[in-house]
Amino acid sequence: MTSQEHIKWSMRSILVDWIITTHCGHGYVPETLYLAINIIDRFLAIRQVSMEKLQLVGITALCIAAKYEEVSPMSIADYLAATDGGYERDEILKAERYILGMLNWDMTCR
Image (cartoon, rainbow, N blue to C red; front, side, top):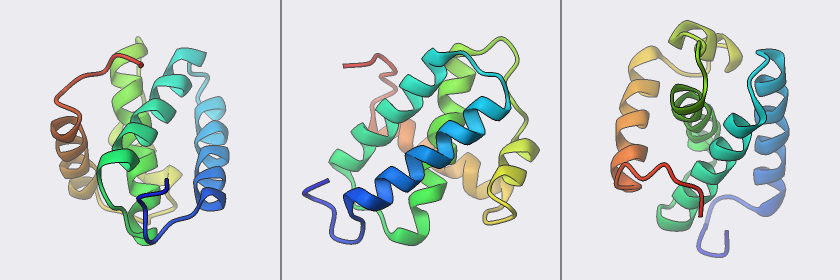
């Protein structure tokens, strides 16, 4: 977080609270939550993120983690609903490819 110019620790805390709420609302396993937060933190450590895109990073990390850990992850439409229409389908899919690329497709927790 020290390398982030536009977001602060308090913003990360709000994002994590929201991710927890979304995670619990869909009955995901705890490992999905841990992986999602790990993805968020690893991505924030290597890329600057604007305040406007922070929620996109969060919901995309949850989407990636769910695809990795869950038997039946939510649909993209469910993720869009979770953001209350803040993003479009293509934005989440593009962010998914970008985040995975930045992490070299490494989904192991460190």
